[in-house]
Image 1 (tube, rainbow, N blue to C red):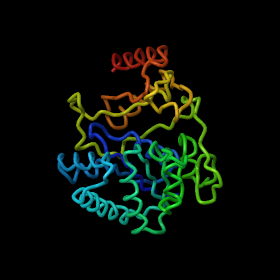
Image 2: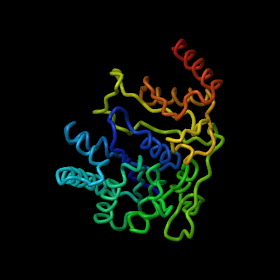
Image 3: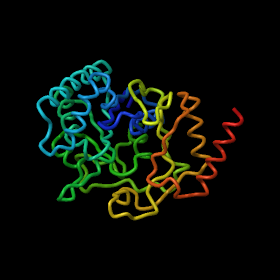
Length: 295
């Protein structure tokens, strides 16, 4: 596939660029595909006031659904988004759904896309796609049955997504209309060799502000997946059964990569458990310190 349009359905706080969008960008680059990217959160931030953004965010958690005012805001935003898609003429729409709070927005987005671009193939993944209903059917399965998706991925997409973009459509974890039983991508154990390097170079950072009032954008780093704990209030174990971590050297190489590519100097570690491997945590700290002293 030569032209991919990536969308992150990430209506949430506006403190940092979405890591999910950087993941999609990284997959496109690994597959040598041309791509465009849009964060719906950022798209709305450019068009609407903070109070309007708060209305949208609050309505996501309201069981009564969107108010008419919020529906109008979303509709107008999606019209502009469709114009961008029309201008780019992609072969595939690649969608990442941030969480189950984004389900209603995701459906509106996909309904709008399919109405305006009935022949455009749509592929979706992300934590929101994995959510199961009372019948143990995932949100991805429901969207597929409603003809709003052509493909969806369950589990970690680091390996399968770049291969899918290269044309390998039949892989474990990628589901479509021909799938008899839903399949999942097995959890990656060797993150150092299989972790998909995110890319922030096409992500627009204006309008993002961080809570620590740093003078520049804060970028997300993920050094591990899963957790060594088993807290009753947490669903991380449902996504990653085992705790897996990257080496300190591997993490520092990514930090250096983002610094050289986009000038990143502030990072947020989004792990479920930052000190799951104290040895590698200390190693990355020492390596970071040495890079700082050398520079």
